[in-house]
Image (cartoon, rainbow, N blue to C red):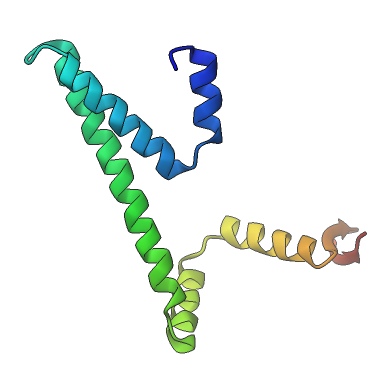
Amino acid sequence: MSDPAQIAAALVDMTPRERAVWLLERAQVAVEEARPGSVAYVQSLRAVARASQELEELRAADQVAYDAANLTAAEWRDKVEQDAQQATDDDLEIYVTTWLARNGYALSVSNGALLLERVG
């Protein structure tokens, strides 16, 4: 597959892991084809390093997600509390707005008063 449009379409359809593996394989082929010591060789080695790092980060994220599923209720509560303490006002505004929307509510301001309205 050498057509850029086909490559772009295939990349869009890939999962992040599939994309990282594809990039790693492509970079490894470029290293094999490049002359050692050339600019292309060095760039290909860097591409291999970047793709490998991205793949490792995805694996680490999967491990964290797996670990989170194995937390006890008390551990989960502690984690949520810690996250809440680190949240900024912007984080909280997004959380509240999203939660309200999911539950069919919205906030509005009228004459300086904050109102909770049922929507939908």
